[in-house]
Amino acid sequence: MNDKRKVNKALYLVMLAPLALVASLWLLPAVTVSASATGPVFAQPPEPQCVCAYCGWPCGSGHASWCKYK
Image (cartoon, rainbow, N blue to C red):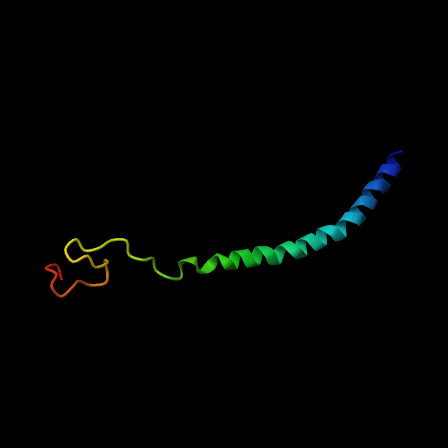
């Protein structure tokens, strides 16, 4: 009886090995593509969120010619 279980386990392993190989070959490129898709998120600096209180121009863009803070 014990020998029959060993044969069954070996048979299942032989049947599952190709499935595991195909799954790993399919998942590896999918993980690589998803990792590279998230790469350039920080490629551009974010838009300024503040403005000069006097002239209203965005921070980092300078000031209007009439602004007292230029």
